[in-house]
Image (cartoon, rainbow, N blue to C red; front, top):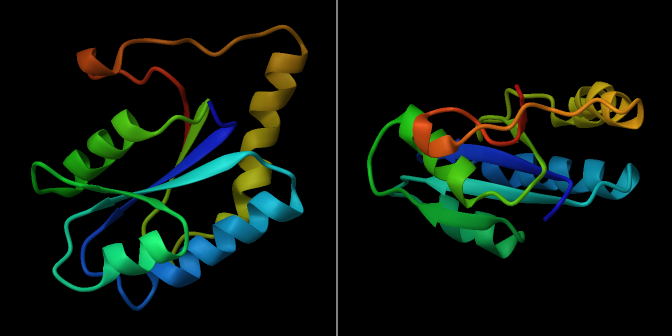
Length: 129
């Protein structure tokens, strides 16, 4: 299991998905974060090819819709925590370390995150948006 998974729902984000993935990879490298990038895709352009070429795990949706994309992406992610972000380059992925730090502090002090079952429409990992 990786430390964090960044789940990105996409639909025709060919122009910006590469920028997002490269920013996330830079954050992972600079902050020594063991992470993965999951792209939940429903595109008709070259978004999935670009994402795969840059090392993201690309999953094709069974059902359309923004919420379904996140739900499907969460199910495929292996990160201990999940960070959500869109593929249109509107999220500041450079904030990932700051989002994770309070969670790490809680664990260092002996606190744990509450886990529940995703099948019951609850998250089974810490989610940061």
